[in-house]
Image (cartoon, rainbow, N blue to C red; front, side):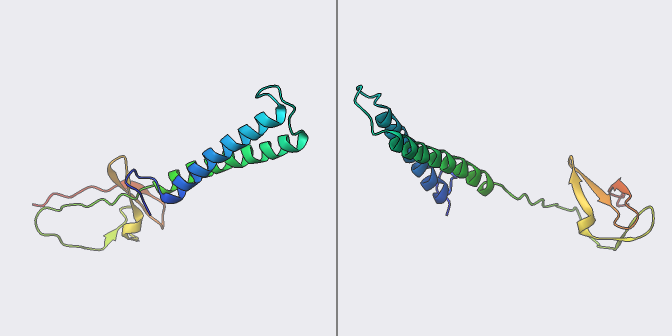
Amino acid sequence: MKSSTGMYVGAVILLILAAAGICVGGFILLGASGGAQGVTGIGTTGVIIGLVVLIAGVVMLVTAARKTRQETAQNVTLKVDLPGETKIDAMKCRSCGGTLTADNIKMVNGAPMVTCPYCNTVYQLTEEPKW
């Protein structure tokens, strides 16, 4: 499901959990070191727990960023408005005469390019005059 800002609910939940994990891990590390007010800390167990929670928060943050990037990928469909009457003929390769399909035509820098699957010739598709 997509929210109004373009991020998915799963990514938002992961970001919230990541922020909580980073904060809690940092607080546990701070308490374990006794750095808050010079109070004796909880020792090495607290440091290990704090590091594990902190690392889990960072992993969730990276996962959320990747998930957002993957989910926002877009497919572009190009619609062509052809003037006048259109007649569809079988396309043949200029070089070897092999039959071409729509899969053999790709847009490269705004120009339709044809790649022949039989002879591997690559050329630009041009429109013949209508008269």
